[in-house]
Image 1 (cartoon, rainbow, N blue to C red):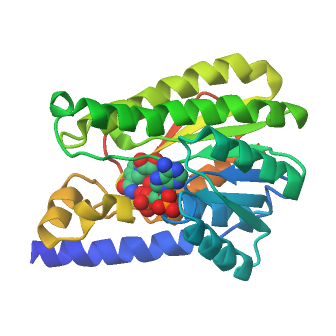
Image 2: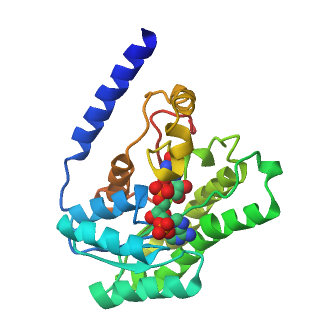
Length: 276
Ligand code: NAP
């Protein structure tokens, strides 16, 4: 009985989440946004939402086919979009990513660094050295390099916004995602440090820490009944996030509505614990 009530509450909550997310404005008209890892999941939703709010958007990911599919789908939805293959750990790919934005849309105002990997499941001190290296190369070093390399473009526009996608696991490590959690904590530090360096240049640096979001990346947590029940028990709102609910936070941070916010991480976790 209690379980049945829990389920119906979750259905109602996710319906109201969909309704809340259907409201958009044109806060980003005239802006150009580059979003990494944006052919699926949270990144795709972010690209879609920034585009719906008026930004021209460059989508990217490792696989050419995924890029063309995402571009086709977003174009169909009326978004001014282009796309390019970019593995974030590949320097040549990152160069082409930013050059594409310049050639197609004339500059860059917003970078959303969203890519992450987790090649191994386990406690932090059980992680293999190769998994640790891969996780830090993609999740942290590439985020750092993307931010460093986009700076000349954003400086040319006399201001802009950089947004990193971390995780609730960056605050409260997930026991089976040890090294991944530490990499996400590093992004909180990167956000603070870079935001302080850039604060006088009208370049804001912020971060989003999503809870558990219904995407392929988190499939192990929401696809089987038993995993779903365990995961939901740890979420005060008793439901997973939809990617659109993270995209809305990103659009806010990228917009002038967040013009006095820098060095901040917004937690969107349905109440999962982060900090006071
Ligand atoms: P997802 O649904 O699995 O989407 C992954 C996207 O990333 C795809 O477009 C994939 O396309 C691309 N991609 C993967 N590796 C890449 C790389 N090295 N370079 C460029 N693109 C790459 O994942 P998601 O759940 O949306 O996760 C997005 C971000 O949110 C990650 O930083 C993740 O840590 C964070 N996050 C997720 C959750 C969650 O519960 N889902 C919670 C907290 C934080 P290709 O295969 O074509 O490369």
